[in-house]
Image (cartoon, rainbow, N blue to C red; front, side, top):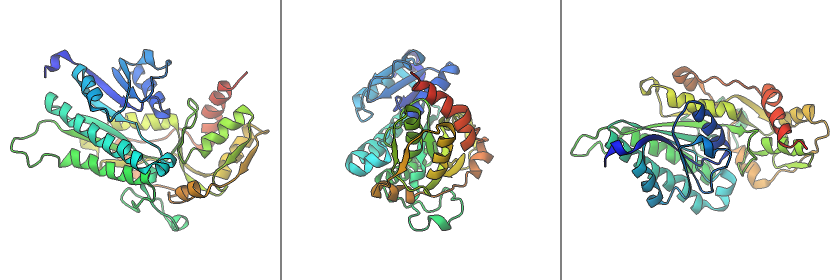
Amino acid sequence: MDNRARRPAILITGANGEMGHGLIHALSQRNADVVAVDLHPLDESLQPLVRAHQAGDILDTQLMQRLVSKYEVTTIFHLAALLSTRSEFSPEIAHRVNVTGTLELLRLAHQQSTWSGVRTKFIFPSSIAAYGVAGKKDRLHPLKEHEYTEPTTMYGCNKVYCEHLGRYFAQYYQQLAAQPIKGGVDFRGIRFPGLISADTVPSGGTSDYGPEMIHAAAQGTPYACFVRPDTTIPFMAMPDGVKALLDLYSAPEEALTQRVYNINAFSCSAQDFYDEVQKHFPQAQVSFDPHLKRQAIVDSWPAEVNDGPARRDWGFSPTYTLASAFRDYLVPQISARYAP
């Protein structure tokens, strides 16, 4: 293939999601050429910010090959996924989307690198769902990346396996080939905590009880929280999540000591969320009505994680605490969203 005919670009899958919105805005400020793919047509507000956008399935190999015939993909931000709660209802579909989709994109990244001779960056949002700590949660220290990776959900299993696929493509794929392989895949993963966004409505994640509570309070509608008040997991405001992706993307590969990193901003309970909501929305109507299955999923995730390697290797440092996330980011933007 004649690379001179193709324009370098960054590919983002799942571009319409909560993280896709923030990432596209941030990359547009860097004047990056972005090609966005999502199952649905790209949000109209994002379309002027990208080089090209395409509605389609990441499992459609013909679609993906058409894109790479036009663009030299230097980096892939693979955000597309079937989230945790939905994956439990459709585990076979979750496996196809989350695992087969990732595998095909890793192969595409490797293909791109063999054409260019330069390693293709592959940025992968993993999840706290990669852990499985059911029955031990209250007795654990902040977990490192290699500890308790025995998830109890299909989504968690998918994420752990894709982390291993990424390591394989980055370090071992085609090592035994007869001819030396130029380039390769520079896989980098982040295990995200629960993410809270002011820009988009939550869409099916098991950690979405926090943001759902805030959005309901801003609209003046009652909300039944689907976990117990004492349920505690790590969280992060979406701008810090997007910044983490970009910081890891920008880090020199030689500075990285591992392929997958924990990050965390603050650990808090559902009651902590409710207390903050009441400070800013005194009329909020919130009840607690735990959903057995969803509660079990959250109970299998740790209350805290160790993110020391991310802070050491690529300077991860979140801006927002729980209080400042509400005060400076969530309440102003969400209130404006639902203003008359």
